[in-house]
Image 1 (spheres, rainbow, N blue to C red):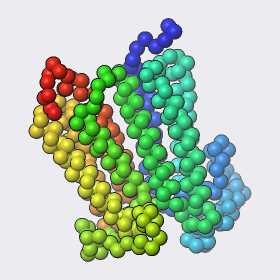
Image 2 (image 1 turned 180 degrees about the vertical axis):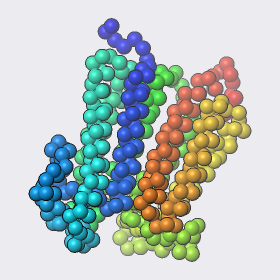
Image 3 (image 1 turned 120 degrees about the vertical axis):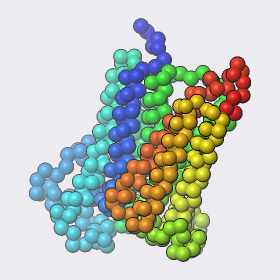
Image 4 (image 1 turned 90 degrees about the vertical axis):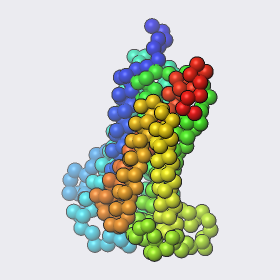
Length: 355
């Protein structure tokens, strides 16, 4: 046939979900890379040849020599042994390898699916957008790393947050497109208050992840490790001498305070949404999704408090970042599911039930 005659493709959906799982793994490994201070161990960007790690003693010595020329070694890791360097090198190499793997796992099947006319036309354009975003993510990753190679001893927090934010945006788009490929097209209609609310929760969850990126980039989880106060105060002192934006992006106390406020808002929003879904007798799919999301947010908040009060050990820090991605994925499903339910719930024949 000359044109695609169907509007859904389970095979394409499963492929998109697989790539989303790889993105999830990359975000988690990226969190571990940050927590182990490994992100600057590879000082060059070689998209192709960089996939091959050092394979000889001489190659390892050359990589170590390059690392010893940057400020992080001189000011933080002076005297580091070669074996210690290998440990941080492998974290960063694994992170970059996952990025290359994701690129191949997306691009090659996408081209095959296009050639075999298996991608529904209504979502094919999203594939091209995702392909472009993947390439952009590689560039942003190097832009982030380069910020810590000359004057700083770590990467710029705002660049790390942009890098994380784009990875999460790619994840959301992969999941949403996968849902669409699995089920088929929706019937266009104006969004209801429920749809807007679920979209707002998704946006809030995404923004909270960005605030978490700033916390990680500033090592802000290492200070004010008491809860619910911050060194006995409701809010910490803030250094405003560098201006509003510098304080918002770089002041450790303010960055952590904002992340706490974001958590409270997300807890309140998801809890209210779940209660409202049960009170208005929404379909089981919506109620289970809303309740599951609220439960995940409460668990994530508890994990966040434990992570903070233990000054962000590697295990808890990685779990907390993984939990954030899971919450975002659940919020994506809730927003998509609510949008899909609107035609059945709010059509004129049914009336206003569930509004």
